[in-house]
Image (cartoon, rainbow, N blue to C red; front, top):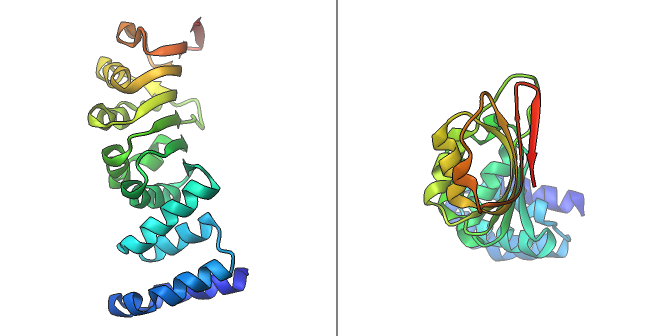
Length: 202
């Protein structure tokens, strides 16, 4: 099975747009017969990121198999950005460094996502890594943040999170104390961390 799927992926790299249209029915059938997983379809999509047929098929396979989109690296981010226009209601779980998200693909995701969003942006070192710039595009999105675990530096970041948080679990790392009043009524649980101190509101 792995070899069969691999052959299709190799073929996708090589063929031109006209050949893709002609060979798509056969490739689709071959992938199905080979037992291609949702991950296989996402890899196929990344081989040809401009093919809507692959984006739709990968999104459908992810809906059935995984029931959500997962982002833990740059390749995941690119694939989800391509699939979301065809499955914008699916939940998205992000567990990646803020640096991974600082690409045009994140803007694409915030544009099309209209489901639940779990944002876990882990800190790999003691360095403070604010996520304000990643929250700002969410203000005009239709998604709902149900978990946020990351750093906020400014009042604008707090306001952006408040605009999309809904009955959320919020674990906020602060560089210095900030007024979090805008978040009232937006969370079920709130923890805030700054300068090695810990405060919790339940």
